[in-house]
Image (tube, rainbow over all chains, first blue to last red):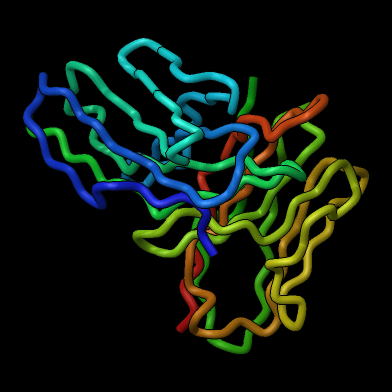
Length: 110
Length: 116
């Protein structure tokens, strides 16, 4: 069974706009990670946020974590066509187990 | 630094045939994962190794799937016999884990298996 669930399932925006995707999970976590997967390519780690952190930035990426609501959001600012990909949240539970959600498919239109 | 290497990249076999996938993790990474990814879904863990020990194989269908990680480096995942429902992408990942985790994982390009 999958721990995390991304929302929306699919998102289409114009280049230059911001993209926000959310992840909700069910049980307590040690950390939460976001990964990106381009068409035909492998998964790439984007950012890791620990359970005692509330916000983290990396370049154009901003991740928030609300453990009371069991949710996280990934914001991509000033999107580019190259950001077109599937984005997965992966919840890190105890025992070093990581569970991936089904992903959000992002299309950035030039 | 070389990434995670997997081979083959693509494999087409008939049902009931055996198939094997190979993975070489990033040098020095002590933890290795095998995942299965169906189209439009996230990766699902099959097995996790810490060095040579399989520490989580609860999702591995042991009647037909087997895996090994000899000497704690390379790993092989085998399916025998393959079924139509095994068609998917098989991903290998590795991580360097020191202390409480989980840690970020580095993924290989995957092997796309088609069972006909």
